[in-house]
Image (cartoon, rainbow, N blue to C red; front, side, top):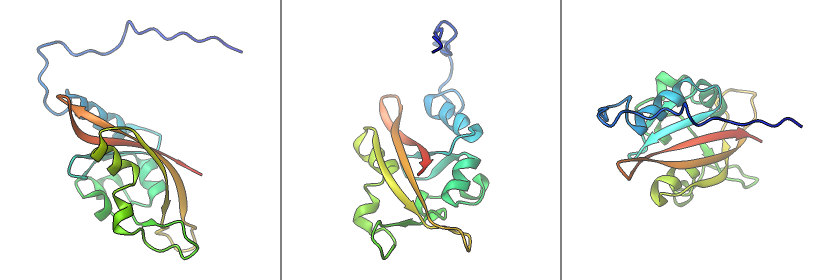
Length: 152
């Protein structure tokens, strides 16, 4: 078994005078990271609009391309959630508020859960994904949520 040590001496920390404009604040850094990530992930703002999504996230969630969903509300961007019944009906309104990205926004805490995503391509089966979300803070307030997905 290998032993690995990570050095924290090279950690990025902005200068105290760095402006907190998009690209320099915490939310802006996460947006850039998600946009270029190889992993399926998604960043939404406090209004539930998609700020950034990885290409792998679009593929897994059946959202098309990142450019096609950025700026849209999460559930208006093509994401169709199904319940876990044998009927596979669309997720009911009260249950939508409990999905990890929205629960992390509302609670200000990490959230985890399973989602069933309706396939958008004919002949492709629906996907079940594990979603782990964390709130993203700006100046101590919840500004959005960051979610990583893993297909089951």
